[in-house]
Image (tube, rainbow, N blue to C red; front, top):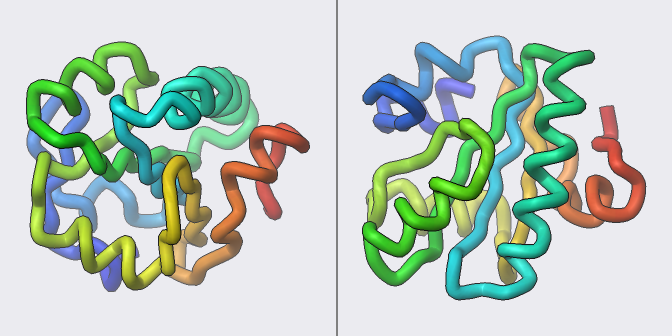
Length: 135
């Protein structure tokens, strides 16, 4: 996971380094935005999935990658989501992640193994329709 985010700061309750908190974790990168109605609808599904999943797999984390138009909009959106990690608004790593994972639209969930391998780029579909990921 360090190869993907390395020293990028991520937030939850504190300002932490991704390499420190995501090591050994199965990570769901959630590309989304408040202005996107399908994103807001899917966020409710993902929140429920995340809470249930963490009971069985405490090594699962979600990292929210915002496409919001302002930091205020992003913070408003975060307030209705689960306690996920998130990248700082407008961080330079966001376009890089979108390219790396070939994100073509939002909402999008990319599932990444603890070693940094992409397990699925169709996490949204798998969660929404099956309630599970590939692993």
